[in-house]
Image (cartoon, rainbow, N blue to C red; front, side, top):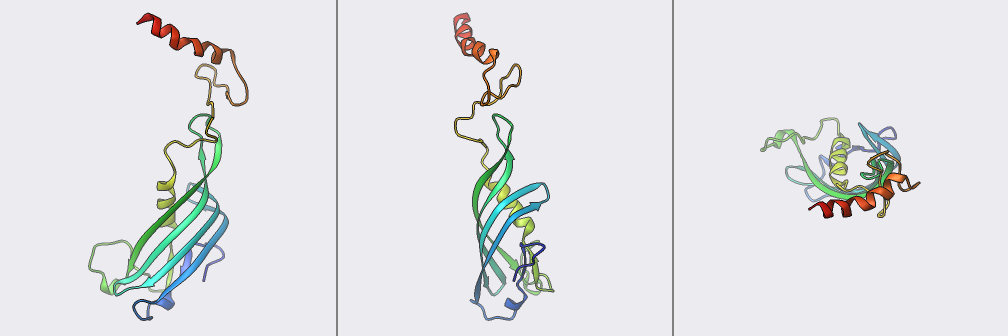
Length: 166
């Protein structure tokens, strides 16, 4: 079912001639995957493929850990994400809408681009290595999770001084 070189390339050609309503569930798992600039670890997905009149409906639920950067301390981290999506790949002969999602004639469908898109959308805006990350010193750039610098003590008094000026 899966291609060992690309676990997101699925053989779905056998469903082309099946009756409408036929469906299959395909587990997709991969320890490490690079999708362009996106580094993915521990990918686990359940892909349900259903034959419809127009084509094949893909219903995907997936969990993974994505490499990103903590917005406070700028360390690389692997952040757990979870997402799901539904997409209809149409038979070329029955395409009524303008769509890029057409089923290939050879029966092998690569879901890599869709996975990349939906995984990126699942990344939260506020990405933290830990909930209480202290970030970097704005003066010297020291990682305040690892050390205290003289500036971090000075900055605690800055808001009070600014309030006195008003």
